[in-house]
Amino acid sequence: MILLLLFVAAFTAVGVRLTQLGFVSQGRTSRRNSRGSAVVGRVDIVDRNGKVLARTFDAYSVGVHPSQLIGKPRELAGQISRILPMQSETALLRELTSLKPFRYIQRHISPANVRKFMILGEPGVEILQEPERIYPESALAAHVLGYADIDGIGRAGLERQYQDRLTASAQGPLQLSIDGRVQAVLELELQNAMTEHSAIGAAGVVLDANTGEVIALASLPGFNPNTPSRSTSDARFNRATQGVYELGSTFKAFTIATALETGVIHSLADRYDARVPLQMGRFRIHDDDAQNRWLTVPEIFAYSSNIGAARIAQAIGADRQRSFLDRLGMLRPVAVDLPERGRPLYPASWGELATMTVGFGHGLAVSPLHLALGYAAVVNGGVWRPATLLKMSDDRPVAGTRVFSQQTSATMRSLLRLVVVHGTGVKANAHGYRVGGKTGTAEKAERGGYNHHALISTFAGAFPIDAPRYVVVVTLDEPKGTRATGGYATAGWVAAPVAHGLIRTIGPMLGVYPDLSRDIDLTPILPLVTGTAAE
View 1: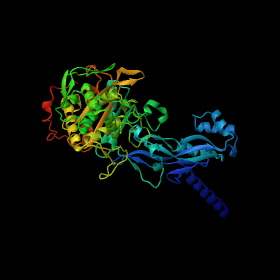
View 2: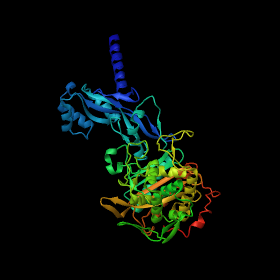
View 3: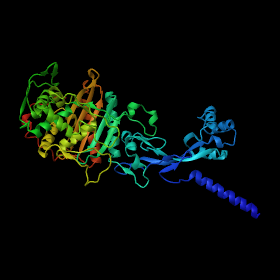
View 4: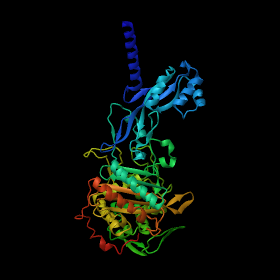
């Protein structure tokens, strides 16, 4: 009886230990599989409010040491096939008879199947404990987060950018500047606009104008980082940071700000000849909403005059224009902590014609995030900062460099407000939020020229413009006009309304509420503007 009890106790102890080895976690951030290589775990990624966007769970995989099998491979292949019906006996037999020391049978199997494999009692079959990366919000912020592969290696987005930080077990969660609520609204507004206007893609940015923090960044179509292999390369492409586009008249803000800063514009009352199109060799610069007269600076901006902007850029000159655009980060990959960063396209020969066309947003292709960072510098008092996707403390914004004076920035805020009150951006005028901004519509550049039937329609702005807190950029790729827009697919009709809906929804989330008691005083500017710009 004593001997029997000893045997029972021994077998019980062995069973308990086997259970511990099979089911109990042995460390948070890594496992070493039977091949001797580390399978890396990762710490959580959370948004600025602590909401989990990426998390690692313990999972199990099954593999085989062919040389250690004691059963017949063909019989074992049949048994395993009954546990894993998706695996064919032929394929399993090939793995079980491999000359290699170890072969995976299947990664990430269920606990129920773990028990079935243990019951087989085959010493050559090994259960491995491995971490599995899960994105509980599915496609939310997918292009920001990126994804990690089955071996715990970051392959895109922040998962790749911060590989070392995310695999350091002593570190806490990686906290992002992204606000999950704002991100969800941005993605929804862009998706609705894409559907309504049959666009092939869209991108959007919400940026803290004073700290450089990215509050939301979206690219559509999107993908599910839980199953990246099921998505297309187009869906994984980040249009907000990786795609570069000619963003049209939104660049007129940089042209006028540069002219104010350099003294080219002495007064907003300065007038420029826009009576007839400009002819430069075989190229002709014209206005879509031609006024056919001399225009003041506010009119050039509000009516989005290409002729006026080209004349201002011509007066600035190529060297000064290029210098200011470089200081705004427009001539290098966008400054953000993501590996997916597009390289701007700009003229190889920056002559007089290139200077004039760049002045109204043609001939220079940048990403929507480039544009957002430039607008932040225009409205925040003149300081350009790189973007960050990590949450910053309130008293430690991203370090920046001064590009424009406070006076230039104040003047530009008034002009941006003018565009939304009396210009092409009126459909972005969210009631009480004092939105300021600029529309931009450009034909897509293609090999050999431009596609007149494919547009990039963009709205870039900030709110509340009298004391800017957030910059918003919305871009639609090849939108189509509808009956509601009168057939137009230009930015004033398709992008500005997206910004309107976005700002109205996210404003209260970000602590910005409608306030009709304050606004920028446009009284000094309005006498310089005749009429109202067309949409």
